[in-house]
Amino acid sequence: MAHAKLSPSSAKIWMACPGMPQLLASMDVEYKVGIPAATGTLIHEMVETLLKGRLNNLTLEEYYLDTTHHVEDFDLTVDQDMIDCAKVYVDYIDKRMMELDVARPLIEERVNMPEIHEDLWGTADAILIGKDTIEIIDLKTGKWAVEADNPQMRIYALGALSRYGDDCTVQMTIVQPRGWHKDGHIRSYSISAINLVEWAYETLKPAAEACFEEIPTYNYSEENCRWCNAKDVCDTYKLNKKGEQNGGTRANHI
Image 1 (cartoon, rainbow, N blue to C red):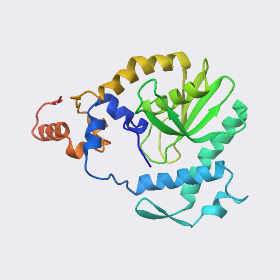
Image 2 (cartoon, helix red, strand yellow):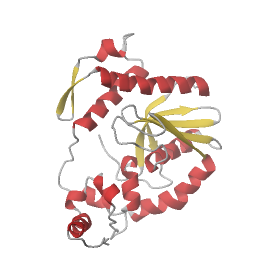
Image 3 (cartoon, helix red, strand yellow):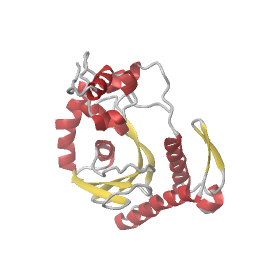
């Protein structure tokens, strides 16, 4: 699967560290995911199969339980926990479809933001188009808590808004059955279309453009660097980690 140079899933990182996309693209290695990410991919495939009516009138248990699937480099066997995770997500989508009077959800929908940057696009897990509300629903299968208001969700919302909406409310919802959060496994954040578009042009667009400067800036952040796939070849990261070990101060590079 092709990945955008400005991936929505890593937007929090490249918005803070403009050098990240170019450094990642220059790496002469193929990034390999671990078992948690592969498991998440399988659960997403299960959800898509169910929501697109491909279970042949069987339940998730009847269709998937104890079956083995090759995902990335792993052979994964579907257990009840994985099925329960998928069910929480699907049940929420069904509930919101009734509340918003939506006939069908848009599943694994590609969204583009050429007005922000031509290299900015992604795939939203689910989009519901209501009369006055657009809802972006994202399934997170990991245990690390994710807030509903984050750059990835805002980018998906912008893509949906540019194609399907106008003057409406945009709701962004995280469904995370396995993760602990003070607000529970399902949490939402709402924003007006006007405020979302303002954020896009005042914050997102300048950040995206900065990633393609001839000499981009690299900014160290313990939280962001933790999840950056380019950190092993990043001089700024190495310098700051070495400085921390020696009791030094933080340094950023251009």
